[in-house]
Every structure is written in C-alpha cells, then in structure tokens.
Image: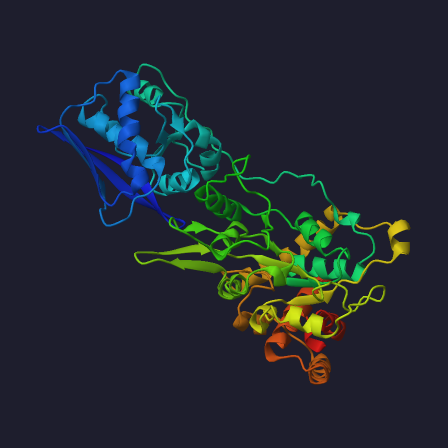
Length: 506
C-alpha cells in the first residue's frame, strides 16, 4: 500500500505542492527518503522514530521508502516532518489516509511528538486557499496562517492530538480567520520631536507622499537619522495585498511579526558592516535579504559611504525593477523589493565640510574622496538629494509648535490616494506612486504648460542637470502638484523640485 500526503516546497515566494508517498514492504529494516532531500529532511527520520516511540507506536521493522514528488525539485526545511510521519502512519493503517486527500500539512516534530513552529505557514495557507484545500499546521503558526482567509485551518499542538482528531477521540476546533485591518499604532517617536529643519522635513514629506528615494547629507548631529527613523511614522498602513505579501516574506525568513501580520510599512536599518548577502539575500537556502524584508517600506542606510562598494552597487538593479533575483547553479529565486531607499551620510570623512561652526581641515580633498566612495549610478537613483544644515541653538531651545506625525500622515495618505486613483484610471498594475512609475506613464501624467516648460528648460541649461536628473525633477514636481491637488505642474512646483537636486547642481 502506498499512502500519500500533500505538503509544500518553497521556491522563493512561490509555494509548490509536493506529494509525500510512503510504502512499507518486506525486506531488511531500513528507512530511506528520496526526492532530493537536504540534510534537514534526512534528519527527519530520527525525529519521527523518537516521536513514534514516545507515542507508543511500534516503528515497522521493514523496508520503508518515502518519496517526495516531483523528485526534481530540491526539498529543504523541517516542515516535512509532519507530512512524512502522517504518510507512514497511513501506510501502517493507523489513520485513514483518505481523510487527508484535500489537506496540505506541514510542521516540525519535537522528540516528544510536539509540533514546533515552521516558516512559510501563511504562504502554504494561501496556496491551500487557492486550491480549495484545508491546512494542518503547528499551533505556533495559527496566528500567522489565520490571516490567509482559509477557513479550513487546523492548528495542533502535537501529533497525538492530530491522530485523536482524525480518529474521532477528540476534536480540534477550526481556526477562525482574520481580516487584515489597521490599528492606529502609537509610535515611540514622532516627527514633532525634530526641531527646526523645515526644509528637510518638507523634503521628507514629499518623499513619503510620492515614494521617492532620499539622500541626506549633513554634519554629525544635524538630525539626519532622526528624520529617517521618524519617516515611518508618516507612512500610511499597507493595504490587504501588501500586508499578506510582506508577511509572506517575513514568514519565509523565519521572523514572523508578533501580531501574525505586517500591517505597517517595514523599516529596516542594517549596520554598514552588513555583507552583500545579508542585504540582497542569498546563501545556501537563498533566503530574502534586507532589501526584501523592507518590501513595501523603507530601507535606511545610515553612513552610506561606509558600506562596501559592491553592496551599495548591488542595489542599482532592484531599485529600477522593484525585485531581486538570486541566481544559483540549479535554481533562480526572485523576491519582491519595492522599497523606498533613505540614505544618510556626512559631507566628508571628518563630517564638517561646509559647516560654518567647525571647518574641515582637509577640504576640499576630504569631501571629494569621501563622496567618491559612492558611484554615480547609485546617486542617480535618488530623486531627492538635500543638505541637512546643523540646527541653530536658538531653534533648539525655542521649541516652536510642529505638525505631529499623525497630521502629516493624513496629508501623505491624501496625496497617495490621488496617485493610486490616477494610476487605476490608466490601468497601471505595477507601482503606482510617482517615484516608482515607469517612464511612458510618467510622460502622460507630467502635463506642464508652455510657460513652465520654457522655465524648466532654462533651469536645466543653467544648472546642467543630466537627462535622468530632469526626469527625477519631474517626478518630484508631479508629487508636489499632487500635494496641492493640482492636475498640472506649475512653475513653482518645478522650482521647488529643482532645489532637491542640489548635489548635482553643485
């Protein structure tokens, strides 16, 4: 008799249905798992033996063959423990295997038969939902899987409780599904904490409204990191699709959120000593990197020139395509990477080039050498490049009333809704914010009158902005116009947008 159980394999973000087959036949006692298993799957044999012993189930002293089909897909991860154990129990006729025909199962077995947390439960639940099947998962994965909308989730504490459920000894109540929603989270920081810096705060609000990449240059202590860390407090919550997609990435990485769902835009700030693989992803298991963990949110790179040159340059392609492909000898894994890049750096190595209060002693060579650590193509990926001047002591002690993050977030949400509605009218399926839309669509929405066009041409000739820089200015000008509810880009919108290309003008 051959018993079959359904489970999943993960190829990047894509779950693939796997059939686990078990056959017990006469012969020398052996336990063999075939179908391209990795070491983790191979070690499942010992965990299953121990579980059967703890549950008082005699392990067959016969030839046991477990096949995982399709056999040409690599199988990795501890979530195969449960489906292998169930298929063997079915072959032993301990359970009625027919009751698992429309069920996907996954879970790691402890030596005592308990089921431990495994990554990717929400992805498996979504696949089961699409195929009109139920899902069996560990109790530790219940909160995460519930957000998938699958009404047939059975979350169990141990293998014995699952056996009792399907043999009628005791019943496990199905998990109640959850609907993604936004809680008005109170952050421990607020944009009103930043005193002064009106120009920088205006640039940050524009960037948040249009999804623009930002580079902030300034002396130590000028407030660059404060602005970056508070930018997440003015971003609107993720929609249902974005929440589930982002949660899948975190689940596959083995770091699911406590709430079971990522409903706020992620904020990732890796240290400048981070390796290339930790940023873009990869390794033996081709896991997502920081650029994918920041999907639909912010990737903040503080002290940008201190990152390895190759690590920074590896961001060039993902910033254009909004995804990252990790290539290996036997597979190519693609993860989404629709991020907003926020970076900060000092103007020079010592940090005081251009500071009126404390001058750099090696200027201008110090500033030029430091800036040359960043390639021109990466600088071209920033829509907004600003200098953050050191705050005046008077502004620090005379605390003027500033808009809170909640107020700014309302304005940002309003502006983003304008962009999303306009993109829907043009049937745009990809990124819909001004900072991410494709060039053809950008040309259609950047409508300017002849007078503004002439004004813009004069500015370009005077400032020597590159062709790509011109498009960056138009993107930012379009966002400024949307913030004011204007359908056309006016002269003042272009004039303000040009101010955010100061590095190129200099």
